[in-house]
Length: 130
Image 1 (cartoon, helix red, strand yellow):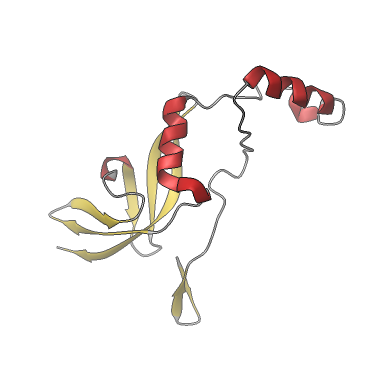
Image 2: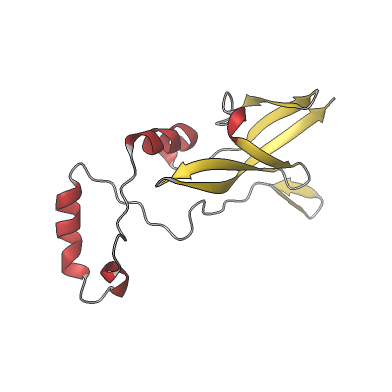
C-alpha cells in the first residue's frame, strides 16, 4: 500500500525480481529444451543456474500466492506484542513475520529458498495495536 493524493492505493511489486520460475513435471526435459537457447543466453552458461524448487517451498509459495500468483494484502492487529492476522494469506502464518513497518503497511517474511534464508516483503495492514 502506498499513500498519495490523500488516499491509500494498492501497488503491485515483483516479489522475486531476479528470478524466472519455470514449471515442469520433468526437470531433465526442461533442461534439454533450454539447451537450444544456450548459444545466445550467456546466463545459462553459469553453473547451477537452474535451481529446482523443492516440494515444501512450492507448497509454501502456492499457499501464500494461490492460483493467481499474486500475494494479496493481509490485515490484522497487534495485541500484547503478538501479531494476529485476521484475513489474507498470512493468516495462521504469523510466525514467518520478522519485521512489520506499520507506516508503509508491509511485513518482512523470512523464508527458506534453495536452502538459504531469504527475506521477502508482503502487504500487511495492522488496523489496531493494544
